Amino acid sequence: KFNFSAGPAALPQPVLKRAQAELLDWNGQGTSVMEVSHRGKPFMAVAEKAERDLRDIMHIPDNYKVLFLQGGGRGQFFSVPMNLAQRGDLSQHLVSGQWSQIAVAEAEKYMSAEVVAKTQTRDNMLWVPNQEHWDINPEAAYFHYCPNETVDGIEINWVPKSQDVPIVADMSSNILSKAIDVSDYGIIYAGAQKNIGPSGLAVVIIRDDLLGFARKDTPAVFDYQQQVNNDSMYNTPPTFSWYLAGLVFEWLKEQGGVQAIEKINTQKAKLLYSCIDASDFYGNKIDPSNRSKMNVTFQLADSSLDSLFLEKAEEAGLVALKGHRFVGGMRASIYNAMPLEGVEALVSFMQEFERTNA
Ligand code: PLP
Image 1 (cartoon, helix red, strand yellow):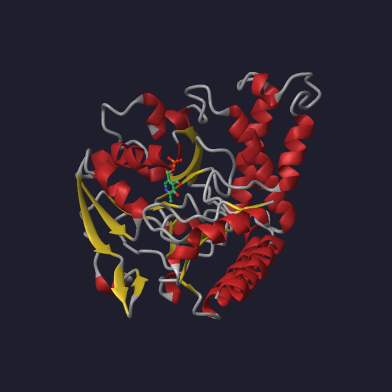
Image 2: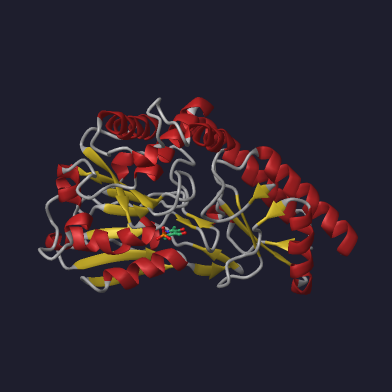
């Protein structure tokens, strides 16, 4: 089966096989990795290697800390404003879809959250206005945006710039999918369940001069400085998720890192969008410059065929293609773990479905 779920999403098969082989007897310990102390040497080695590999893969500069925390992506929606509150009481936001909108609602609980721009309709397509159309207030404590909107299928391929204001990016659904320059950002965070590992884990990459600005009432487990001081082990970390994330990072390195996976991701997305564009039977409403390479949303011109499409797709082993309930239609999530063959199989199925139902 090919799993097109938006998340929790498919993990690389070799990673799952390795985890399966090691499940009952990990590292010659006679127990699973879930049962060993997070403070013992064997697990500490796993934790440190995972961080080292992530640093290598993303070329994370030395003045950035890497945290492995609990609470997923949404946990960061409040952790960011709580941890930056002493830098000021204004956050600014680009709202490009569902997730960045929810981040505003959470930030509003802790500071005044201002939306500088939103996705617009341009030539009947959804388009995210770039920075020529808005400004970042130099007084803001931070600027937040979501470079890949999982629900809407919108990706932003430029980075907001400001001399004074740290850029905070929710990369939950496109982290590790392509090369980026970490130094463009103050904070990068991601819920793990797309390109990293199991849900519940969040990876936070934070420039060290942004530590120490937390509100006094920030719970200790969500206080970045506390977690930095404790190597992400202030409380018992999600050890199994951390271990699996480490296996995913090793797998990604074996594939040739983000440069190599970016090429494959580009190829997969091109193939699928070309199929959608080639016919009037399928459609996509996103401006080509903002089409996501990770979450490809599309509609059938005749939506009465939606349930038949999903039924037949499932019979063909192509699962979880239903679009998010807010958007409708279809969504194929094609994260790093989705092989090119999965997209080829989907495209063949779509062409055949069109031939028999148009
Ligand atoms: N941000 C983005 C872009 C997401 O796609 C998601 C979940 O899919 C979240 C945040 C929320 O993550 P979580 O469900 O781990 O809290």
